Length: 267
Image 1 (cartoon, rainbow, N blue to C red):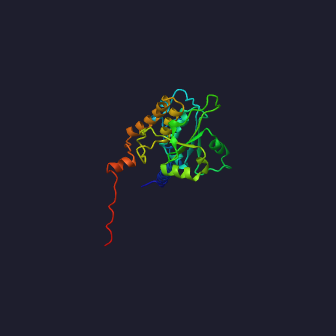
Image 2 (cartoon, rainbow, N blue to C red):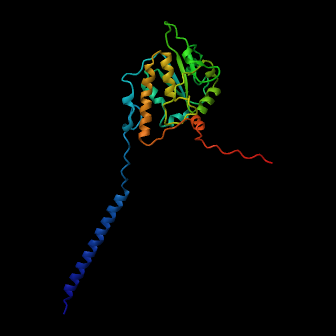
Image 3 (cartoon, helix red, strand yellow):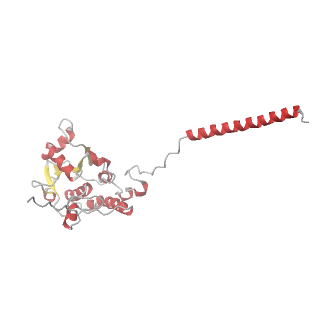
Protein backbone atom coordinates (compact mmCIF):
# COMPACT_ATOMS: atom_id res chain seq x y z
CA UNK A 1 0.00 0.00 0.00
CA UNK A 2 1.41 3.33 -1.09
CA UNK A 3 2.42 5.81 1.51
CA UNK A 4 0.55 9.13 0.95
CA UNK A 5 3.49 11.07 2.33
CA UNK A 6 5.89 9.53 -0.21
CA UNK A 7 3.49 10.24 -3.10
CA UNK A 8 3.23 13.88 -2.09
CA UNK A 9 7.02 14.17 -1.88
CA UNK A 10 7.51 12.58 -5.35
CA UNK A 11 4.87 14.87 -6.87
CA UNK A 12 6.56 17.89 -5.36
CA UNK A 13 9.86 16.71 -6.78
CA UNK A 14 8.36 16.35 -10.32
CA UNK A 15 6.83 19.81 -10.14
CA UNK A 16 10.19 21.19 -9.08
CA UNK A 17 11.88 19.52 -12.05
CA UNK A 18 9.29 20.88 -14.51
CA UNK A 19 9.60 24.32 -12.95
CA UNK A 20 13.37 24.23 -13.51
CA UNK A 21 12.84 23.22 -17.15
CA UNK A 22 10.53 26.20 -17.66
CA UNK A 23 13.14 28.48 -16.11
CA UNK A 24 15.85 27.09 -18.41
CA UNK A 25 13.61 27.58 -21.44
CA UNK A 26 12.87 31.14 -20.38
CA UNK A 27 16.57 31.88 -19.94
CA UNK A 28 17.31 30.42 -23.36
CA UNK A 29 14.63 32.56 -24.95
CA UNK A 30 16.07 35.65 -23.28
CA UNK A 31 19.56 34.79 -24.56
CA UNK A 32 18.24 34.23 -28.10
CA UNK A 33 16.32 37.48 -27.92
CA UNK A 34 19.46 39.30 -26.84
CA UNK A 35 21.42 37.71 -29.68
CA UNK A 36 18.88 38.73 -32.32
CA UNK A 37 18.94 42.26 -30.97
CA UNK A 38 22.71 42.47 -31.40
CA UNK A 39 23.54 44.29 -34.66
CA UNK A 40 25.56 42.26 -37.18
CA UNK A 41 29.19 43.06 -37.76
CA UNK A 42 29.58 45.75 -40.42
CA UNK A 43 30.89 44.52 -43.80
CA UNK A 44 34.61 44.92 -44.20
CA UNK A 45 35.57 47.94 -46.29
CA UNK A 46 38.42 48.11 -48.75
CA UNK A 47 41.44 50.01 -47.59
CA UNK A 48 41.54 53.31 -49.47
CA UNK A 49 44.53 55.53 -50.19
CA UNK A 50 44.16 58.92 -48.60
CA UNK A 51 46.16 60.64 -51.32
CA UNK A 52 44.91 59.36 -54.67
CA UNK A 53 41.53 58.20 -53.32
CA UNK A 54 41.76 54.76 -54.89
CA UNK A 55 41.71 51.29 -53.26
CA UNK A 56 45.10 50.43 -51.79
CA UNK A 57 45.55 47.46 -54.15
CA UNK A 58 45.35 49.75 -57.18
CA UNK A 59 46.95 52.85 -55.67
CA UNK A 60 48.44 55.28 -58.19
CA UNK A 61 50.82 57.02 -55.80
CA UNK A 62 53.90 54.96 -56.82
CA UNK A 63 53.44 56.33 -60.34
CA UNK A 64 53.37 59.99 -59.33
CA UNK A 65 56.64 61.97 -59.52
CA UNK A 66 58.70 62.06 -56.33
CA UNK A 67 58.41 65.85 -56.35
CA UNK A 68 55.45 67.71 -57.88
CA UNK A 69 56.21 69.31 -61.22
CA UNK A 70 57.11 72.98 -60.95
CA UNK A 71 55.70 74.82 -63.96
CA UNK A 72 55.27 78.47 -64.81
CA UNK A 73 51.88 77.66 -66.36
CA UNK A 74 48.84 77.52 -64.09
CA UNK A 75 46.11 75.09 -65.15
CA UNK A 76 42.46 75.94 -64.52
CA UNK A 77 40.21 72.90 -64.91
CA UNK A 78 36.57 73.87 -65.45
CA UNK A 79 34.86 70.64 -64.44
CA UNK A 80 31.32 69.60 -65.22
CA UNK A 81 29.60 68.50 -61.96
CA UNK A 82 28.99 64.98 -63.30
CA UNK A 83 32.71 64.35 -63.67
CA UNK A 84 33.30 64.48 -59.92
CA UNK A 85 31.39 61.22 -59.38
CA UNK A 86 33.22 59.26 -62.08
CA UNK A 87 35.60 56.69 -60.62
CA UNK A 88 37.94 56.82 -63.63
CA UNK A 89 38.34 60.58 -63.93
CA UNK A 90 41.83 61.85 -64.74
CA UNK A 91 41.90 65.27 -63.05
CA UNK A 92 43.16 63.81 -59.71
CA UNK A 93 46.30 62.76 -61.60
CA UNK A 94 46.96 66.40 -62.48
CA UNK A 95 46.26 67.53 -58.96
CA UNK A 96 48.79 65.06 -57.54
CA UNK A 97 51.49 65.63 -60.16
CA UNK A 98 51.55 69.42 -60.35
CA UNK A 99 52.91 71.73 -57.69
CA UNK A 100 50.39 73.11 -55.22
CA UNK A 101 48.62 76.14 -56.64
CA UNK A 102 49.35 75.18 -60.25
CA UNK A 103 46.17 73.15 -60.77
CA UNK A 104 42.87 74.81 -59.81
CA UNK A 105 39.60 72.89 -60.23
CA UNK A 106 36.40 74.92 -60.56
CA UNK A 107 33.14 72.94 -60.78
CA UNK A 108 29.93 74.11 -62.38
CA UNK A 109 28.07 74.63 -65.64
CA UNK A 110 27.57 78.38 -65.78
CA UNK A 111 29.82 81.09 -64.41
CA UNK A 112 29.00 84.75 -63.90
CA UNK A 113 31.36 87.64 -63.31
CA UNK A 114 29.69 88.38 -59.97
CA UNK A 115 29.74 84.80 -58.73
CA UNK A 116 33.26 83.99 -59.94
CA UNK A 117 35.42 87.11 -59.81
CA UNK A 118 38.69 85.14 -59.73
CA UNK A 119 37.81 83.18 -62.88
CA UNK A 120 36.67 86.41 -64.51
CA UNK A 121 40.04 88.01 -63.80
CA UNK A 122 41.85 84.98 -65.23
CA UNK A 123 39.78 85.10 -68.43
CA UNK A 124 40.55 88.81 -68.87
CA UNK A 125 44.29 88.32 -68.50
CA UNK A 126 46.26 88.62 -71.76
CA UNK A 127 48.33 85.62 -70.63
CA UNK A 128 45.35 83.27 -70.54
CA UNK A 129 44.68 80.54 -73.11
CA UNK A 130 41.56 78.41 -73.41
CA UNK A 131 42.10 74.93 -74.85
CA UNK A 132 39.13 74.19 -77.08
CA UNK A 133 39.11 73.14 -80.76
CA UNK A 134 37.44 75.29 -83.37
CA UNK A 135 37.97 77.29 -86.57
CA UNK A 136 39.23 80.29 -84.59
CA UNK A 137 41.67 78.26 -82.48
CA UNK A 138 45.40 78.41 -83.23
CA UNK A 139 47.87 75.59 -82.82
CA UNK A 140 49.17 75.78 -79.26
CA UNK A 141 52.69 75.20 -80.56
CA UNK A 142 52.40 78.58 -82.35
CA UNK A 143 51.85 80.50 -79.11
CA UNK A 144 54.87 82.77 -78.58
CA UNK A 145 56.83 82.46 -75.33
CA UNK A 146 56.26 85.12 -72.71
CA UNK A 147 58.96 87.76 -72.17
CA UNK A 148 61.75 86.74 -69.76
CA UNK A 149 60.76 89.50 -67.35
CA UNK A 150 57.18 88.24 -67.13
CA UNK A 151 56.20 87.74 -63.49
CA UNK A 152 54.13 84.65 -64.24
CA UNK A 153 53.52 82.11 -66.96
CA UNK A 154 50.46 81.36 -69.02
CA UNK A 155 47.08 80.44 -67.57
CA UNK A 156 45.62 77.42 -69.36
CA UNK A 157 41.85 76.87 -69.13
CA UNK A 158 40.68 73.32 -69.84
CA UNK A 159 37.06 72.14 -69.77
CA UNK A 160 36.62 68.71 -68.19
CA UNK A 161 33.58 66.67 -69.22
CA UNK A 162 32.16 64.68 -72.09
CA UNK A 163 32.47 66.31 -75.50
CA UNK A 164 28.82 67.42 -75.46
CA UNK A 165 29.16 68.79 -71.93
CA UNK A 166 32.37 70.66 -72.76
CA UNK A 167 30.90 72.17 -75.92
CA UNK A 168 27.78 73.29 -74.06
CA UNK A 169 29.83 74.86 -71.26
CA UNK A 170 32.12 76.66 -73.68
CA UNK A 171 29.26 78.14 -75.67
CA UNK A 172 27.09 79.07 -72.69
CA UNK A 173 29.79 81.03 -70.83
CA UNK A 174 30.71 84.26 -72.54
CA UNK A 175 33.84 84.72 -70.42
CA UNK A 176 35.49 81.71 -72.12
CA UNK A 177 35.43 83.62 -75.42
CA UNK A 178 37.75 86.32 -74.04
CA UNK A 179 41.08 84.39 -73.86
CA UNK A 180 43.01 83.25 -76.91
CA UNK A 181 41.59 79.96 -78.14
CA UNK A 182 44.14 77.22 -78.78
CA UNK A 183 44.03 73.59 -79.86
CA UNK A 184 46.34 70.60 -80.24
CA UNK A 185 47.38 69.82 -83.81
CA UNK A 186 50.15 67.27 -83.33
CA UNK A 187 48.05 64.16 -83.96
CA UNK A 188 48.63 62.52 -80.57
CA UNK A 189 46.48 59.41 -80.08
CA UNK A 190 44.77 58.81 -76.77
CA UNK A 191 46.10 56.15 -74.40
CA UNK A 192 42.99 56.42 -72.25
CA UNK A 193 41.66 53.11 -73.56
CA UNK A 194 39.12 52.44 -70.79
CA UNK A 195 36.71 55.17 -71.83
CA UNK A 196 35.11 55.71 -75.24
CA UNK A 197 36.14 58.89 -77.06
CA UNK A 198 34.08 60.52 -79.85
CA UNK A 199 36.95 60.60 -82.38
CA UNK A 200 40.46 59.25 -82.76
CA UNK A 201 41.92 62.69 -82.07
CA UNK A 202 40.07 63.25 -78.77
CA UNK A 203 42.20 63.13 -75.63
CA UNK A 204 41.38 62.84 -71.95
CA UNK A 205 41.83 65.89 -69.75
CA UNK A 206 45.16 64.75 -68.33
CA UNK A 207 46.46 63.92 -71.82
CA UNK A 208 45.42 67.33 -73.17
CA UNK A 209 47.14 69.11 -70.30
CA UNK A 210 50.23 66.90 -70.54
CA UNK A 211 50.77 67.72 -74.22
CA UNK A 212 49.97 71.41 -73.70
CA UNK A 213 52.34 71.85 -70.77
CA UNK A 214 55.14 70.04 -72.58
CA UNK A 215 54.77 72.56 -75.42
CA UNK A 216 54.27 75.73 -73.35
CA UNK A 217 57.05 74.88 -70.90
CA UNK A 218 59.31 73.51 -73.66
CA UNK A 219 59.91 70.43 -71.50
CA UNK A 220 58.95 67.23 -73.36
CA UNK A 221 59.49 65.12 -70.23
CA UNK A 222 56.37 66.66 -68.66
CA UNK A 223 54.17 64.68 -71.04
CA UNK A 224 55.70 61.35 -69.98
CA UNK A 225 55.51 62.26 -66.28
CA UNK A 226 51.78 63.00 -66.47
CA UNK A 227 50.92 60.01 -68.67
CA UNK A 228 52.67 57.44 -66.47
CA UNK A 229 49.88 57.36 -63.84
CA UNK A 230 47.26 57.29 -66.61
CA UNK A 231 48.82 54.19 -68.14
CA UNK A 232 48.87 52.54 -64.71
CA UNK A 233 45.19 53.41 -64.19
CA UNK A 234 44.25 51.84 -67.52
CA UNK A 235 46.35 48.73 -66.88
CA UNK A 236 44.77 48.21 -63.45
CA UNK A 237 41.32 48.31 -65.04
CA UNK A 238 42.28 45.97 -67.87
CA UNK A 239 43.80 43.52 -65.38
CA UNK A 240 40.48 43.47 -63.53
CA UNK A 241 38.39 42.64 -66.59
CA UNK A 242 37.81 45.96 -68.33
CA UNK A 243 37.74 45.94 -72.13
CA UNK A 244 39.66 48.22 -74.47
CA UNK A 245 37.39 51.00 -75.73
CA UNK A 246 37.79 52.27 -79.28
CA UNK A 247 36.59 55.69 -80.35
CA UNK A 248 33.16 56.01 -81.94
CA UNK A 249 34.91 57.18 -85.10
CA UNK A 250 37.02 53.99 -85.19
CA UNK A 251 33.93 51.82 -84.67
CA UNK A 252 32.05 53.52 -87.51
CA UNK A 253 35.00 53.33 -89.91
CA UNK A 254 35.38 49.61 -89.24
CA UNK A 255 31.69 48.78 -89.45
CA UNK A 256 31.47 47.88 -85.77
CA UNK A 257 28.55 50.20 -85.02
CA UNK A 258 25.03 49.01 -85.73
CA UNK A 259 23.23 51.28 -88.16
CA UNK A 260 19.50 50.66 -88.60
CA UNK A 261 18.47 50.31 -92.23
CA UNK A 262 16.65 53.28 -93.64
CA UNK A 263 12.98 52.72 -94.26
CA UNK A 264 11.91 52.47 -97.92
CA UNK A 265 10.22 55.53 -99.28
CA UNK A 266 6.45 55.44 -99.38
CA UNK A 267 5.22 54.59 -102.87
